[in-house]
Length: 255
Length: 255
DNA sequence: CTTGACCCTCACGCGACGTGAGGCCGGAGG
DNA sequence: CCTCCGGCCTCACGTCGCGTGAGGGTCAAG
Image 1 (tube, helix red, strand yellow):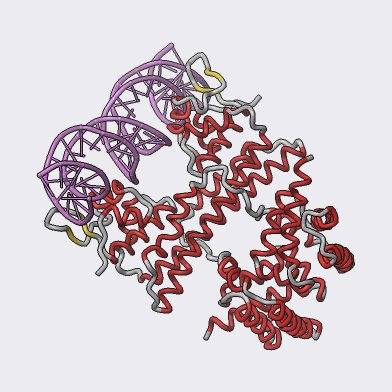
Image 2 (cartoon, protein in one colour; image 1 turned 180 degrees about the horizontal axis):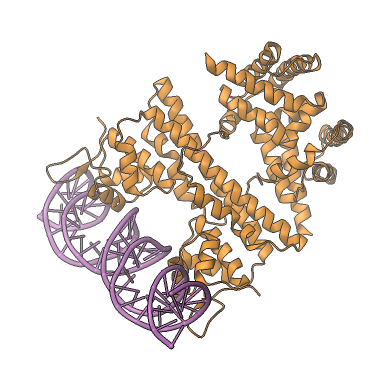
């Protein structure tokens, strides 16, 4: 029973009516039909397509290319989503490079160092050459689940936290035991402990797919606050845990 | 002795000659001078300015606005860099929201759930309304300091980690003491403990300005992994610590 | 049956360049 | 010395993704 006028769809999607007209003109997004008065009528299929369009537009794709991407029937919707994740990851990394450049500039300024012209444009130059639209490597972090889980944890009582503490300790003990016993990160014991670790998170905080778990593992060595937590349990544990998590994720994904 | 022709500068910066001509036309970036034949000559000052221009352009600012930003002599170069960091952070968060939307879409698809139209466009709608170019609430994480600190912490020995653990415990004890004694977050005791906390991070991990510290504080309640750490010390501590950090940051910034 | 909020189709404008057209340097080779 | 080639110059028009009216039809409410 759904069906939207241009104005409704525009407001819903946060774009202007003119933009929708434009998309119609160039054949990127045509209404499902028209009323006898000539009014454009969009329905759910168009809504979904518009969502996709806006996504790619946000990432700077030209409309023509977006049409080509979306009209490629050899790509499944799920595959689309995968590619979108990768594109976002690429963009984020690009921005992080920019941030790093800014950081370098700050350091250079405070230290009174003079960067060479090449250094100054390094980040731009590289980005323009490697053409970020490619099928780049997709190691990236699922940074948002945290926010979602905030709602869940907000409801935890003191008792909950105490229970969680016990569980946490148990998990950590298992990790330390495997680690101090000299188990390799890809040994069954290590992987089982890592899986236990993953389950603990999934139960108490947020759903933690193996892929997500990998990111956590990486963060345990990348972020000193986390590194400290694990290094205090046993020096060297942070890196070992990261490797165990990855090994376990490999195993989980094979099935 | 430096000095570049349009072509040289263009290649160095990864832009086209035409773009530089354009920037000259609209007065955004004029060459330092001309040869008697009329050739544009750029030198280091222009190079620096071009770098800034490209930065803001990358983030989607219109050229006119870029000119306004860069010609505002009331903003120091260092302040510029600070703002740039914030802008990058905003952008990254925006992308992370996008990623979250994609993730939701994937989950919805695998679970066969149907999202409401509003949900589908949630991320776009919100972003477009709050207009991220503004001097928006700048609660954001200086996500890059972590990486820098990784280098620092990579060199820490076992002894270092043990020392840090002791310090951590001392800081935490101070926090718990103030908290359980019923001190308000904006009491001197609480703020002093928070300041101690900040100093501890600055000494051992990365430079942690009050502004940055605020972000950490927010994360302690937003991110369950951190929340857990503090809630386990004393239930309610996470939120209290966050408030104390903010109070302390207010105090620090007043001076 | 009017009013006001929506819809339609032209059609021109704009920002940030791309892309020639037509012509002037400048240094390396014949 | 001339010539040739790559690089520079200035118009000036084209493109993309819309914004912004102009001029006019539609529809539900009062």
